[in-house]
Length: 413
Image 1 (tube, rainbow, N blue to C red):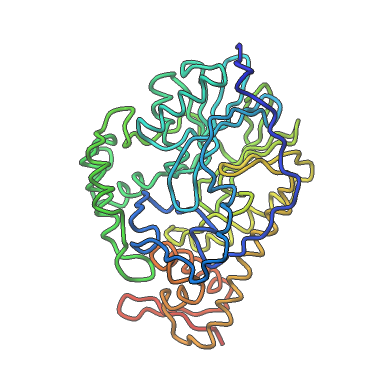
Image 2: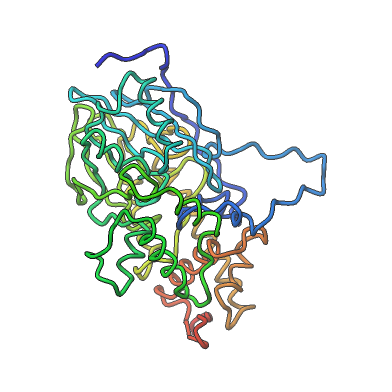
């Protein structure tokens, strides 16, 4: 396939070890909000952050993951082009959509948000790389958040592209439907009304730690309702056609890639490892300068423990030439960055351990206020706090009791 080389250059990966995030107590800087549909009016507790009282203090430069998308197409590894699609979510300004070239055409990784606007950007980036939508034979979706799976169903519909995910792939809409008492086989999966009704019932359920979930804003629900239910619409969540299991191989960019199941950020998270050139597609599992959100809204007992184990797998890959994240720039020290993320969460666990002496019967909200700044208080911060408390409970360091539907925690012993 011919390429438009005028739009490409070599993007050298960053060789410096990433700096630690100094704003560890702010989930909107430490990790993108991926728990569910984005609702900007709730991103900072319903209001804009107040200006610093010290007007002479220069604002912090944006982190890599917050940078706006550009139209640049850059070769970041043999046969792999990095393109960027715009998104607007807390802590994020773009998603990297990688284009992997081979004799059949291209595979794309994480094709952006649902909707016509993001689709137009995807078509533009493919064109700048010298390809058309019909050249896409495979879509790899690293995990079940909308900024990663958005264009997958439409690429399958328009180009007959395979949709590759981990075999446990489930979107929020799938979870909302399966939590219903209705027969999910009778639901029209792309019906806007059915999906909205299922999602509203899902968010009406109490959180695992007690209390009502915030859910998406009325404005967001109305925008989704008006989007309709066609194959290319917001509601067309992907149905994988080629699910992978851990250790399975897939041929992309003229070489074999090994599937790595990396639960933590989501249970269905998939990384791909190329042993020939030492390339790892890390998705949101390991990002260069922010840490992914770890949600407590999961049926699994200890998502933080799963995340730690998945991060240690990254440390064990000793021949990495470049890590290609879903947000931010390519980087080289994958093991070092994975270690930093583990340290970040260990520090949060230590904060909870120390706080438990002053909170002998604390709720999740009580501990959240210790971990996070006030501007970040809310369901997202509570969810991450809950995941850390449950991890300590699984370790036998905390106890939990139910107080009229509200979980309360105390140090064990």
